[in-house]
Image 1 (tube, rainbow, N blue to C red):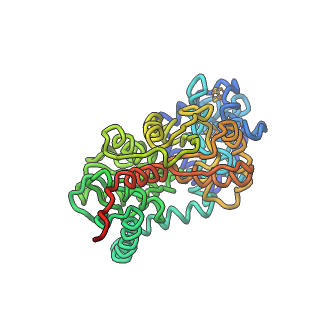
Image 2 (tube, rainbow, N blue to C red):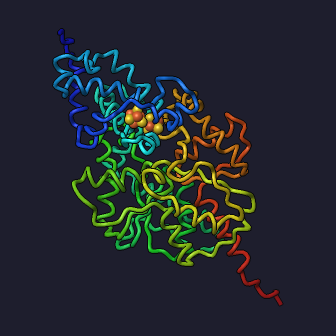
Image 3 (tube, rainbow, N blue to C red):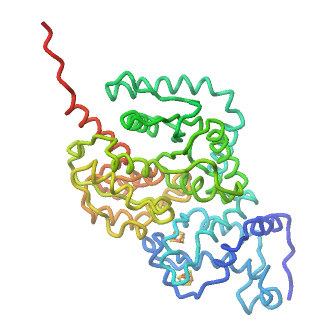
Length: 437
Ligand code: SF4
Ligand code: SF4
């Protein structure tokens, strides 16, 4: 038996694998009956049925390395159990399956008879690639920019205050109400709302919070967490820390994240592990808050503002991995006239093909368009001219699929539909001013 010479790069990659090797990952790595049931569950395989797109096949690349390091037989007789020394060409070849053709959506997991979490394995692969400088440059750049923004928050606080004042004016004009405010740094507010870069996640939220008479304040930071996509817990924690510290400093009761699937997965489900326990505040998606407002009658909505049939694309991170299936439907049933389900939907919904950070990586545009074929077919079959979603990544991917596959639909966010319905209800209930004498 000969052992491949270990370079520094290989040691670094193996070290990264060891650091993320917890009980969940060990279970995923050790259990696979190679039955292949997961193949059709994966949107990448369903859209482009090649053997390398079977979830178990992509996971096997990491399993072989794990067996060589941890399986007693793999250490002695690697050929017997499919164990393999990691090489630099293996690492190079891992980038495509880990970053481009697995969106970490976990549809394979819920369809696997053993619940094998292939996404977790591919996240470990991403950790190995990030540690050895093989991660997509754009993801690294976005993660590091977010960390730098946290480190230099004081330097742009005043600039941001001016930007927010401009947005406040825009929101007032749209609602026709000069009393609307976008509070920033509001000590003691109940909600810390975390949007994304750009006005499109802040303006509709400002209108909704105003109409619901909510006690809220806007975060200085954006919800996205590219550290999670890199499989890099240190970067992911540094990005999350900005929001955690801000929420604690302001003493809010809850952090409400904008329409963003992975941001919810990061702060709601992963971050307590990175910080070693639950936070002194709740973490919710705006989708849950909207559902509460609708249920509690805090928003007057006129669904005739959205008269065309609307179908809904469930974000994998919100629905399958986060359990938010009924909440968006409560909102849709109140805000639109004709809601049509996509088939399948909810936790069985197919990934749009843009998850896992893929939508941010320009060089893999064709790959994600090919992987989105299944989603394009679902949208066509639903037959609705409007496709709503509650995730920025999904929104971008669905918009690209719309052009690529000539779907001829309009892609909208849930908040956008709510604001349409809310503005129409407001106009309907407006008391006409008396005629001037
Ligand atoms: S991951 Fe699950 S479904 Fe896929 S081959 Fe292994 S055991 Fe079968
Ligand atoms: S996590 Fe999603 S994209 Fe990755 S292998 Fe499983 S089904 Fe396919």
